[in-house]
Image (cartoon, rainbow over all chains, first blue to last red; front, side):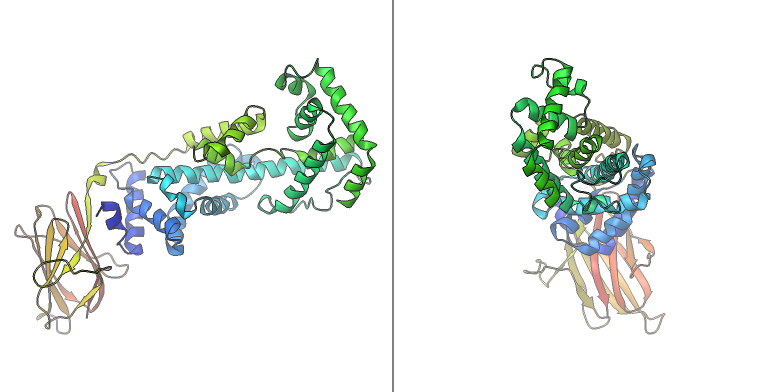
Length: 242
Length: 196
């Protein structure tokens, strides 16, 4: 029987105590044994053991909090560190199905994954804030005119980034509709660069060198498409139905 | 007109970008080729995702947890298994749970890797109503080896093994215990020891 399998017979309480003790030794830069913490992860993910998951949360939540506060995005996000810490654990829990646990051969790889999840939830929040800012900007221009604000009804300012699935589905429908209305590849590249990537015409020209004659060609292509879009009755109906 | 542009931009902003977890899986090399290729192609044109990957890389470096294999990973961790009379492991033992009652059993024998462990529970003559455990460990170098008896969450006292491998615990209440024997390169667990 391998040593790791032997650890599988230890009571959870013993594992947790040893994981805690070995982690303390690790952070004191002393000789330490990561196998006990790894076994806790294995029981949580492979066996779906909720108590093992609770132990991991107890063991690592302060470490994750420290990661959150050290992230370069954190100062600008305007949200409590606890919020990101809890989302990071959720993302990890959802991200490793039992059959994929073998991709993580040691504790280092699991903690690296938890770090990735911490980064990901903060990026999700930053993306959400950027998009909310774009909506605010659109509404400030002509606050009374909602004719061309097709998703105003579902863009709830209080909707958190983890609850945006319905909105993303609507956005995908809109994007597909616009793609269908493009007459050629250049129009597709221009509107993708302008609306999806939020690039300036010069950046689009440089990104797709060879497709456009010059920077003005990018602007002209995009403007022509928008003019045609505004005259398109089917698209107007689509916006009203949305 | 400006609102039309801006509303479209708000509605479509980064709609073709992989979600943050997909980017993370990509960066950690966890995606199969079929899923990684479209992300690589997207990164070639998307400055936002490229920046997020760079942020992730910097974050992983900044917060790196370097769990290098250390000396103590070479320690052998063994779980003791009870042996029946005759010395062979009992077939079908899925758990090392057992109970011992002072005065009505002989020594209980266990095997743990190279080690053999004998336990005898007796009534403690110096503490009426309490128990004692006499133990013997064979098959390992007993220098700097100690036995520790834990009850529930309490940290038990460690007693050193004699050169012959003997140890004793006295004045014990009935109840569940864990016995752990630790040495410089071994760790033997007897996780569920119930003294009845």
